[in-house]
Image (cartoon, rainbow, N blue to C red; front, side, top):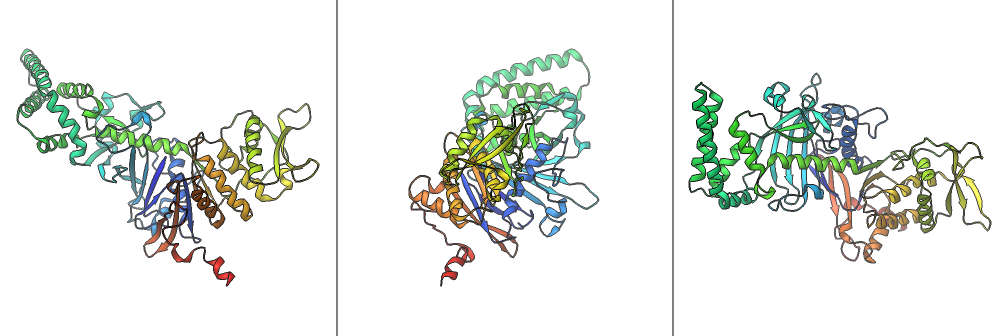
Length: 534
């Protein structure tokens, strides 16, 4: 689940703004206040990752993309190249990558900061920050290394990484980032420290045996080997430290500097794993000893960053943005020979999806009846020979006799709303974002959409919705559903976006158990109706 988004110097947002999400998030605000910016930030990251271009950082516009934001300068607040664009995404970590007990909860946040020094230079990834999603405390910060700074050691030691899909990625196509700041909060180090105390004697014995082997190897070679001497010195220092009476503070101080040398492999803006460039035999032994420890006995900042990258990748993959305007309907369609899993960003895959899945047509008709639209869908082949030619028609259920009409012959609102209804029914654990689904839809149907959202966030679908809207009727229905205990107040996040002196501001308006707003609407929003009635 997507928990929150923080934006700074991105389009309408100048000063940092936090947008908390819920299973149903409704974004309100006056025109040009910055509502669409919230969706565009997520779409920008998704568009960039889906491009799969090697090393690409940001793609504000691509042909037939899901968002067109112009140039990097166009995306900056006030178009000021002196500013640094920041996007922080707080999301859930999948069960496969759940944290060790020292990390509070299953939320993590990754912040990406971009800059462009001048129009003559490329966009740069300035910094990657990893945050505890529950406490919002920073755990680590990384800054990218220049390609010339990536040691040949890395390229020589590793042939490839695997990306979030498990596919090999050549190390020659990766960037790298080095840890430049790391937390010294005891909560992250305590379990490792306690494990060390319990197993100190055993590891000391193993290290002393390794030291003896190294010393014999050094005598046998009888040559000046700086790398070996450095390894021996490091090993002696480690044994000396572990033989001392160290406390938690001393332990953190020593290990902190070691972990500050962590280098990550980067695929675009995502961390994909640690780079280990040291050829020292002792360092290799050290890593093998660490791998033998249970996960909760190692504060592995590289693994933490990789998990954050994976969590962001999974969030972007589950994000399904829908265009503000869906593709107009046609009188007939030619089946493309594929089985789509969604309606398509512009609704262009809707006909094929319905053609291939008769059970989805039935589910949709049940909801069209619940929404009291007055039509039901009929998908059928055209003629008897051309089996790939079919049409999507509507049956008028308000007539005594079944009257079939072509989809283009009914009001435009039905064709615009239908892709959203079908996508809500076909999605499972997806994040569906849409701008103004109420366009071309009358007030009662706007309210009834709240029932659809309330059902779709529950099992078995468990989807999440981010809706930019102006519909008072939609929020009133959700308030009613809270009052009837069909959804909980925390299932709804109402965000009001307004323009301030330093750019857009986002305020969450909370609901109580009765479905009433605890917070007042800013700027008299929705008071127009009351004024007109006076």
